[in-house]
Length: 227
Image (cartoon, rainbow, N blue to C red):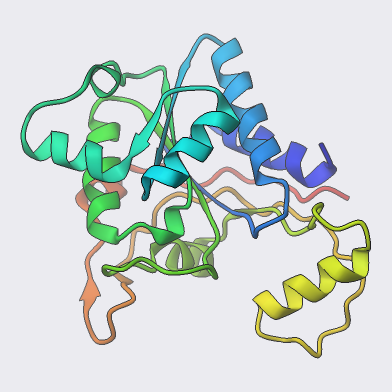
């Protein structure tokens, strides 16, 4: 792993925060980092569960972190109908729930899932890209958190052999194609918990209060970026 991936895994595994966010563009090595996070958590005696907005994403996540995965919809439906599957019923204080592609999940589903997980004493890691395809329903939570509180980030693309191609890809992602395609540096900023102030979802003109459980989230620990 590169320095950014190591810093991300360390922050997500060792901070003690109940909820954290990681922003990782496509090709930045998220799969390797999440595999290492899952392995570290399980070797420490915990259990890991994966969730994603779609069945395809959940299946891909399962193959990456080698644990049980399912869809957010399956969990929220089970909560609403008081009919938890075995894997959900086993979620407890030693469980880490990784929600992949969280930027594509709507806020109401995340609220229901994260609130339930925290009530059972578990921890949550929301992983995704705030500049990818957005949720079909009201969303935008990842971007709100990253803007207001910061987030752990992977900024170096490892998918390309030529660093210039990685820089160009990031420039297109940021909407700045004229940006110099120089070698991208890796940073890992402060791990972020959910915001304490009202957030605005992606539906224009409809501000929403943060879920009640956000008030119990501890502030992010101070970490330094790798040199």
